[in-house]
Length: 602
Image (cartoon, rainbow, N blue to C red; front, side, top):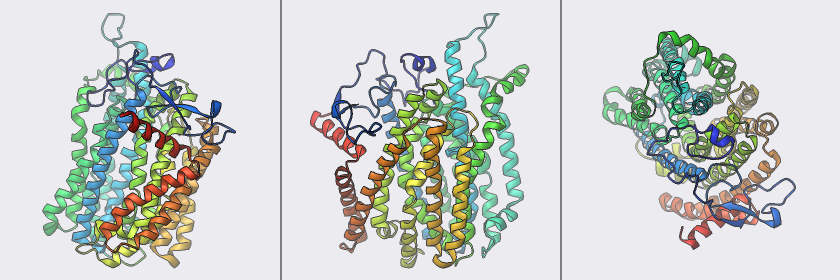
C-alpha cells in the first residue's frame, strides 16, 4: 500500500504520484492543511523509564487523528487511515454478520452431525487457502513488492521517457505482467491436483471420520478456491497498495452471500454438498467484487514478449524463493493449528469438530476486528521500511499493538462473561439443541484465553515481512507454537475432549506471540517490547475483571437476549473503569479523546 498526498523528506519521495481512488481518497491530505490542534493527555505508551501517562512535563501531545503529531506522517494521513479503518471495519462487521447467518444456516439444516463434520473437513482447504492466499501470505509478499514498485514509479516520475521519447516501462505494470500469469498457472495446477487427490486429503485430515465419501465430494467442490482465492489475494494486495481498501474488505461479504444462497436454495436436493458448492460460487464473487476497481486503477497493457525476461529478472528479488519460502512456511504453520485440532477431534464423538468450529468462529470475531487496524496501516509500515524510516515504523507498530490489544481484550471479556448466551442467541434452533449450546460455549470460553495471542501473531508478523527481505524468525516462532499445540493437544484431548484441544490452541498461539514480541525489536523494528508488554498486561487485567463481572451478572437474567444486551453495556463499562484504575495509557487516551470530541462538538 502507498501513502498518497504530499509530505516532507523521504515521505514525499516515497509517495506515488497518482491520486487514490475516489471511494477512499483522503480529501484533507493537503500540504497547506494545518496540523490538528493538540491537548495534553497521557500517551498510548509511556517512554522508557516513565510511568504511564507521563511525558515532558508530565503530559504529552496527542492530536485528534489516530497518530501522534510528531510521527512524521503526512498531514491528514492519520485522518485518512482512521476513515479507511472505519470503512474496512464496517464491511468486516457486515461480513461477520453474514458469516453468522451462514453458520446458522448450516447449524439449522445439519446441526452438529456427521454431515456438518464432513463439510468442515472439506472447508479446511478453503480456510488454509484463505490464510495463505488472501489474509496473510499473499499480502505479506505482495504489499511490500507493490509498495517498492510504486516508490520506483514515483522516483522515475509520473511519465518516464526512454531515449526515443516514448513512455518508459511502468514498474507496477511490469510487476503484474511478470507475476500474475505465472501465479494463475500454478494455482490452476494446484486446484486440479487437489480435486484428484481429495480421497487422500480426507484420510490425512480426518482418519476417524464416519463418512469419508461425503467429505471427498465436498473437498472436490471446494478445491476451486485454490485458484479463486489466489486471484482474490493478488487483487487485494494490488488495491491496498493503491490505497483502495473498501473492495478488498468487501470480498468476504460476497463470499458469504454465495454460501448462504446456495445452501438455502439447494440443501434439500444436495444436502451439505450445497454448502460446499456455495464456497466455490462465493469465491468467484470475491474476484468480481474487486475486478472493476482494479481495472480502473491498474489498466493492464499487453506485455511485449521481448521484455518478459527482463521483467522476471527485476521482480525476482521481490518475489524470489528466498522471500517466498519463509512466508509460506509461516502461514502454513499458523493454519496447521486448525489441522491439528480437526485431526484430534476426528477421534472424538460426532459433532466435536462442529463444536470447535462454531466456538472458534464466534470467539475470533474480536480478533478479526482488531486486526483491521493493522491491515490498513501495514502499507504505511512497509513504505517506512522501504524508505529506511525505522522510527516512523516503530511508532506505527507500537500504536497498532496498543489499539488492537484493547479491541481484542474487550471482546475477550464479553466472550468470557456471556459465552452461553451468545451461542444460544446465535445458533440454538433447529438441529442445534441445548447440549450443543453448552458444549460450544464451554469450548468458546477456553478459546478466549488465546485471543490476545492470535491478535498479536497477526499484528506482529506484518512488520517482520514489511521490508520484503527474507526472514525466518516468524516461521521459527510459529513452528515452535505449533509443536506446543501438538504436544498439549495429545496430552489433553483424551482427558478433556474438545476443551483440551482448545486449551492446546491457546497455549500454542500464546507461545508464538511471546516469541514474536521478543524478536521484533531486535531484528526488524526497534519497538519497546517491555513497554508494549506492560501496556497489554494492564489491558488484560481489565479484561479479566470485566469478564468475571459479566460471568456473575449473566446468571441474574434468565432470558438470553436480555442478558446479552445487558452484558454489552456492563462489560465495556467495567473494562474501561478497571483500565482507568490500572492507569492503562490506551484507556486514558481513548476516554480523553472521546471527552474532547463530545465537549467540542467534533
